Every structure is written in C-alpha cells, then in structure tokens.
Image (cartoon, rainbow, N blue to C red; front, side, top):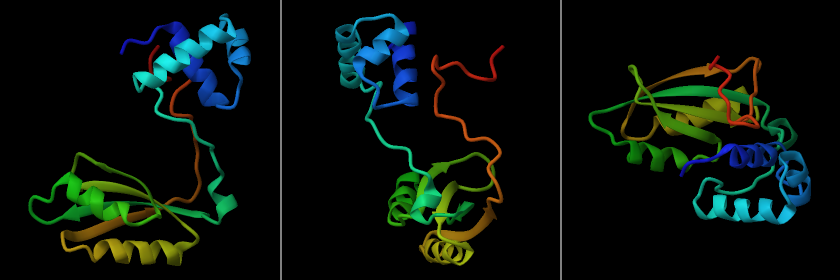
Length: 157
C-alpha cells in the first residue's frame, strides 16, 4: 500500500500519542475528525496500522537489565525453529536472523545479570544451539521511536 503525506502524518501522530482523538489528529494534519477516522480505518484494514499499544518503561516492571545474545546454531537450523524455541522465553523481547557468523540475534530483558545468565543457560540448552555470545547493555544512548511523524529517515539528506 502506498502511503501519502496525510497517511504518514496521521501515523506519526498516533505513534506519538495513540490515545489522541480523531479531532486532535485532524487539527494537527488539517483534516476533519471524520476524514481522519476513515483514513485510520483504511490503514487498519490494509494492515499499515497493525494495532495500538502502551509503551512501558521496563524498569517499572522490574526489568532493569538487558542483553543482546548471538546464537550460533548447528547444521541447517531453520529460522522458524529458532523462533519457536526462543519465543518460549518471555525475557526474549525480540529475535532476528542476521548476517555474519551468528544465526540469530536475541534481545533479552531481565531483572538482573543473574537472571540474564539463567535465560542464556535455558536458551543454550536447546538442542540446535552450538554456542552463544552475549553483551550486557550498560546504558542506552539513543531510544528513537520506530517511525518519525513523517516517516522520514534521519539518515537521508
């Protein structure tokens, strides 16, 4: 689906505040509330918008430690097999296949370093895992939203 400027502006407004009313968004983007609603409905129907959620500070839930873990797998372990296995661990907040030597990269949130270690031990016990390589996050330098209000890349001049 091709998104026009208004669609991108509406999505940007929702990313900033998913609880904004259609009237508030309309005032921001120059449309009536009903026009915004029609566009949001269309964006949901076409799956350009897949849902609405609350952003929660992980530390508020006790998740004060995070790590990135590279998985090195045996043979021809499929991405779906890796995904099914790591999805069983609630501490794994994202997982992706990557280029390079590792087969997958996991992002883990936990209560402390010992908890991270326990999660890595559980994941390393999967039959297809040959080894892991982990890095504990010391501090976050940048925490950007998934998209900007106009879906502009900060890397494009």
